[in-house]
Figure 1 (spheres, rainbow, N blue to C red):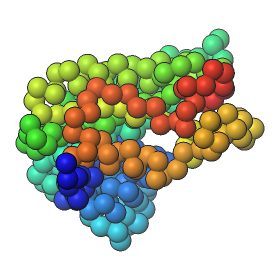
Figure 2: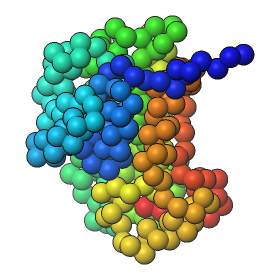
Figure 3: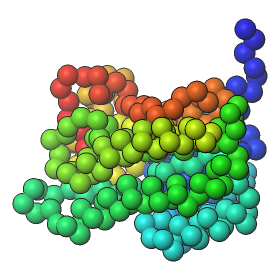
Length: 264
């Protein structure tokens, strides 16, 4: 068999990354723009959008959409902007997320609801809103791709009291599989990446000693890098990953395979 030279190429595709102005989302946006993808990023912060768009537009094609995808109005704005600027969508990366941490007795319904609204509900209804754009691009040979960001916190337990966050990410994993079963019939694949420790604002909220302990406990001996997350998304979005569907991929240097560890 001859391996085609464009097996991992995603040049010319159109993508949306939610939460694309910081952390893992910005890592992904930089990588996809550099790979020749027409990339839209969405974030609630207009200032963050302007800054990220200015940076990424020096590399390639990038538009920023200031929108809160946890609201119907925000999702409508995203859809209308994509329709106007790109006309269709090949890759949707549901990456926006929030984390809350509090002792059991101090958890509030407000923080719980906000966590589930952003981490689970917003992604589901964004898929619903953008499905016509994805269906325009998907085919039996080259399906459109939905890639969700989960967490190893949704795969196994942590001693940190992130109850809503861990439960919401487990929900994202299960929702990924449910969507994959239905949408694969319509030439859209749905997969999920479950990152371990990566440099991000969420990780930065943890005490330094916790982050140091995390790095030591990763079998690979380090935190994840931009290359790690970008490479995985490029694989899933390219011809190389066209047969991958309903997968939850731990991207954690082997942490979920370890017998004992602690993490955020």
